View: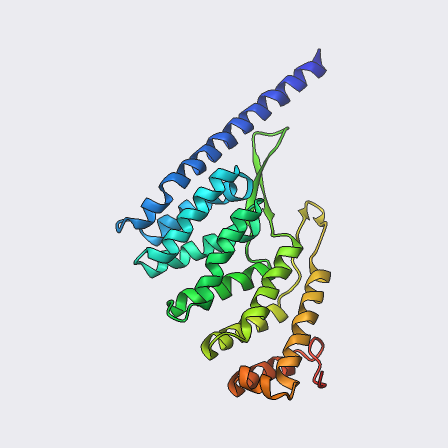
Length: 272
């Protein structure tokens, strides 16, 4: 029967693809066991670690909870104790990924708490604190994603498609930056102003690409986030109360005012 033969062919191809994906995931799970030791080896360079981190992405996004906990535990340790700043920054990027792609709230909280500690620690290396800001900004503008392997039932191929954080997670990343802005030193405030500027001009992103073009954009969500940020910037600059003058240095206000001038459609110049 020709129909049965076709189905058997599909079953065979599907089995091949499942096996290939299983072994790829098994290799990623193995990496969770040696990620901390690999970070600690002086002969392992940053580029090698980036490759290992890519293998960890499907474990974080699709793996079992205990596997995710092993990843976040290792990343927390490396971000705190590794003597190589570049590897610590890479671990921070890993924690940022975990904070939006893990499906377990406790795993996410573990990653997020370490990121908050880094950002608020005035004794921490400034470059590491910048990394937290830049990583959160990248989540907002859609620069943080991973490629999901989708096996085809009809060809011996594995298609890749980008998977972005949920809209709620991207908005939460923006609120995180806004909530911490006032408590940071002026160097970090200025770095955050630059991040805010990049968020304001970020173009819409195709969330669901297809052969016919794009099925879904994020333009409407981004417009709402930008308006929320614009209202807060207006408040920081235009509010006249003494408390705000103490919290926001004039140099920072001047930088924020430049953002207002550059984005008149999103940020009102009228007092709140």
